[in-house]
Image (cartoon, rainbow, N blue to C red; front, side):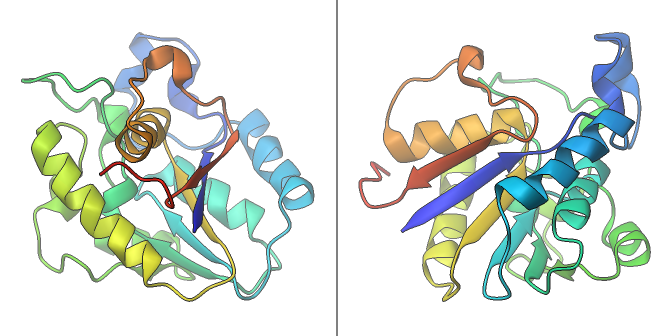
Length: 197
């Protein structure tokens, strides 16, 4: 089985780093919206496909633009939310990486389903950004099992550079660095056949 990870399009929080990282709830820039539109040609979707999306505005916008006019399932999950990489104890979540509330998602993105794996769990509030490496691995294994039980044509995961790299490292067993971060809307396929975890 193969998971296809896609990093979100260019977000407003990347315009003037490090100051822009303190922007809460950043949207896609016009360039980011164009990048998401190009995904329609690069990766055409099918009704049998499923998208699993991080609960941030920029990932949800990327997914909605990319899947416009396609009738695939779209599910938001905190298990693919922003993740600091490499993990640092005592790190804090920046405003740009705070998750949207379930209420905000339902209001602003009504076509998106909610992942019910952790109902009422604090993960919907806190995400996976700063949880310990061991805690991340436990939750990531739960997520990968969930994906393996999905009977869809293809699973696409719209997420963040650190999150994608953390999953890649866990699945492959390779030691990765920030140099391995995907670019905006870059596509990374990961096979679960040879997963080390």
